[in-house]
Amino acid sequence: MKRNPTYLVYLLIIISVVTVSCQKFLDDTPQSSLTTGNAYKSASDIENALAGCYNIFYTDYYQWENVMLSDNRSDNAYPGGGGEETFVVIDQFTVPASNSHNYGFWWGQPYQGIGRCNILLDKINDVSDTKLDLNNRRQQIIGEASFLRAFHYYQLVKLFGGVPLELQSNTADPAVTRKARATEKEVYDQIVIDLQIAITNLPDDFGDASISKVRATKGAANALLAKVYAQRSDRDYAKVLEYCDAVLNSPAGYSLTATYAELFDGINYLNSEAILLVPYIEGNWSVSNWGVQLFLAPEDGWQKYCVPSKDLINAYTNEGDAERLASNVIFYKELAWADENWSPCGNATDSVPFNYKQKHPAGWASGDNYYLLRVGDIMLLKAEAQNELGNTADAAATMNLVRSRVSLPDVSSGLSKADMKAKILHERRLELAFEAQRWDDLVRSGEATNVMAALNEYKYTCVDGEPGNPSKISYNCDQDHWIMPIPQPEIDANPSLVQNPGY
Image (cartoon, rainbow, N blue to C red; front, top):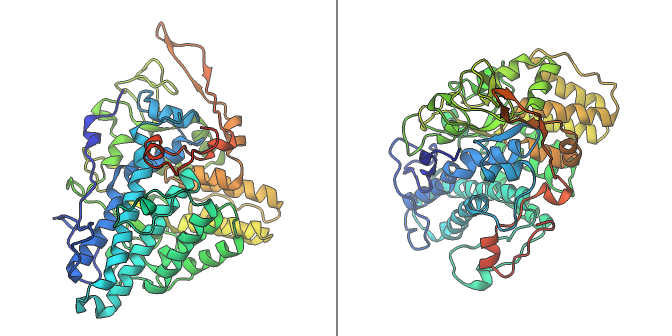
């Protein structure tokens, strides 16, 4: 079926007024944002504009489609949603070059965030309000906006490869707005520049977890730098290790939580493992998490998206990983629809799994938060770096800290480098399912094509009340399709853009 009309309620310009130097980026009464170039006169204007930079995290891309673009595109999930074409073609790597409006969200919303950051960074030093100079607030805001711009560019370069580098947005000059694509390296280099500015200007924390976990900090910048140096094609694992250690040794006191389950129980988000998360308020439409409803809430009677794959369920059961399976997946029976992968005839006794990373849909108004950066990811990235640098025993020790939390036996330190790499990739899958990490991991490891080609996944029809002959799903995943096509409307509007190969 097609997605529920309520889905179309986008929260694009929902901004809270920030009146003190360090305050979380939402409150219960959000007001309008300042994102144009002529409204920056006071410290309050600048704080409002910064809130606008953060509030891009409430848009379609960050609410749920980033998960679809990673977990659906990988071996973790089927599209679900009743076979909606948008996500079927992503799942099977048949996205047409003449892409629809959905693909524009994936390009347009990160660029919207970039535009807001650009204007703020351009205007902040023209504002002479002395409140900005109290407690180093002006420099902190520069650090936050630089981090956010880097974060949005990181999304774009992973999705599309090299993209236009727009560092000035308050202009209609075609020489500025119709830029050619930068190379992947040039985009990553700019991301690094912005993150170094962030590190220079941001504190380790803001003294209150309700602020420090939802705003950019030095720890968030270090964590993103670690991921950047791992993900870029000219990766540097010495840098990855350096920045992972900067996070894990931070004065902010980051550490794994005692249990995996508490990360996702809906009440313990301000924990030691959270580096940066998107905060939501249940029942408040302006700042609630409507994306959960698209993954969960079977009682509303329509088929959900990002349905866990049989391959993923087998990965958990074969590992004996009951704790993470229970935290990440929930099974339901007696659904109001047939599922072509799990229950083609809609049999009431069939169990169908759901993405359970966030657990409380609350009628399109969930208060469940979303981790953008957390320690479990960084710790496994550190193990990856240790292994790539030849320190296989150290890699095992680091990975075993993550495994011991969920009562799994240690991985042997005597594995070969290649075997340890495979173990770490597998561990990241189990740890980070439905956190928009799996596709990046497959690409970074060079295994995306091999993994997708080796999948034995099937869909079924229903014949006379019984499942018909299985039809194997074909995943056309050559290396050209590791990245997405540039949205055709963008190419039409900007003659300087060139489409990616294979589209």
